[in-house]
Amino acid sequence: MESTDKPAAVAATTTTPPSTTVAASKCPFNYSAVDVGLRVVLFAAAVIAVVVMATSKQTEMVPVPGLPTSVRVPYSAEFTDSPAFVYFMAALSTTGLYSIITALASTLLGRKPSYTNTILLAFALMDVVFVGIVASATGAAGAVAYIGLRGNSHVRWDKICNVYDEFCRHVGTAIAFSLFAAILLVFLTMFSTFALYKKIR
Image (tube, rainbow, N blue to C red):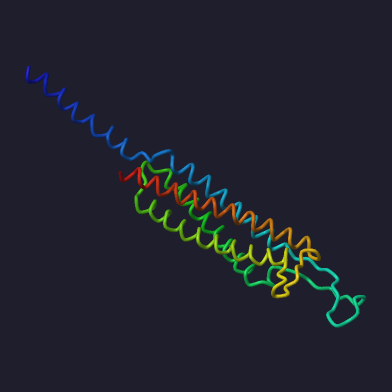
């Protein structure tokens, strides 16, 4: 009787730990696939915003102040004319680079059976940083674009979008994609934080 009971006890003790290990190592909701997908979309939004802003240059014949209105000279409007737009380009370019690097990192992590809490925490913290960067760039560019669209009669800033309409359309489109990128980063921050919470709970 003793010889038959021992193998059964040994089998029970050897088969139980692997199942608990596999269950503990699973990442909730297939974290890697969703994370990589969101970061690829973020990369696309950032690249589109940068390309649209970079190609916003428009040249028009404008009158010269102090001379008759018949005297016009060619003058170009481009993103380098505004420090806010330059900051916008730098912020979105950096965000695009960050998104593709983290997407590759998340892909590599997806090949492993478990995810380290350190990586999830790093993703959440860096996403928060880039939310601030992209949101500030979007706000700064949006403020300048609004003045270009509406002007400001109190300080006698004339609107320019009635002259540089194509330039303003490019700027508006770039800002829209930047706002979309900021929203994606908010979702990424929430998603990474939730995945970390589910893992360490």
